[in-house]
Amino acid sequence: MATQTLDGEIMVDRLDDRRLLAGVRTRRVFAFLVDYALILLLMVPLAVVVALLGVLTLGIGWLLFGILFPLTALLYVAATLGGRGQATLGMRLMGIRLERLDGLRVDPVLAVVHTVLFWAANAILTPLVLLATLVLDRKRTLHDLLLGTVVTRTD
Image (cartoon, rainbow, N blue to C red; front, side):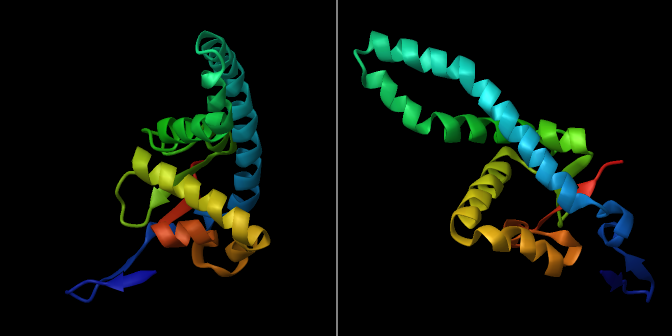
């Protein structure tokens, strides 16, 4: 989106460069698949810990199995997407990152909220999450629109 300064000069937002958005939808889908494979791998040692904890607590620790996947996924997202690179490992592999429209860094809290909104949107509006990228500016999803974020290419 172009904006005009006080002296009449027109500035173009770098996020309007189509090269930053080329192929982002496809890359997001593959990054999602890679990330969830990694989360499943991370769950293996955590499941062993929870199983041992369940034995030590006479079964009470096994209640943690109910929240093991979401907890693992949220910790993974907070550490990677909310970290310096502003991208999960799958996103880095696919050459994309999450950016805020206001130019600030993505922090762990925003990364977790972004993920929770993604899960909620998929639970309620499954096909609309990806279809929204066809009509929204900068190929954003519904949760990107709500949080003022955009996914761009890094290469």
